[in-house]
Amino acid sequence: MANLDFSDRSRIRNREIGFIFQSFNLIGDLTVYENVELPLTYRDGMPSAERKRRVLDSLERVGMAHRLRHYPSQLPAVSSNALRWRERWPDRLPSCWRRAYGKPGFA
Image 1 (cartoon, rainbow, N blue to C red):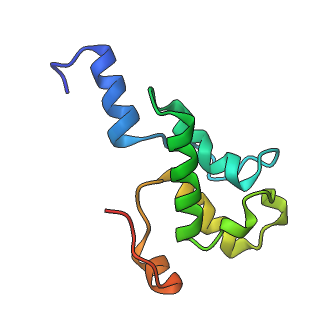
Image 2: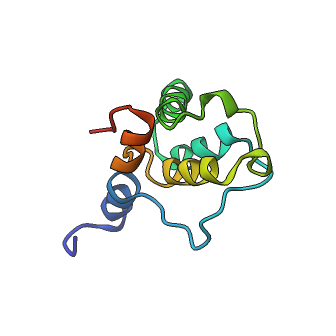
């Protein structure tokens, strides 16, 4: 990493590491769909159709697709936790949720 220039380091942070927010809360003014989509909007070159596919797939995997138009205040606590995980790490699903929802996680 030390030998990389600023733009290469930024690209690695964006695509490989992701964003970690100080507050582990959903944004109350955004819907479930918008909360999950938000981190993907920071990925350069990702078309909106790809973002939509990933968001819908992610919500389906954690059993939340039926709540995509809900706001965080309308969600039970367990659903909020699943959504927070999916928002922060869109390419991973913890094993406890794979067992609970009976669905495979991401590679």
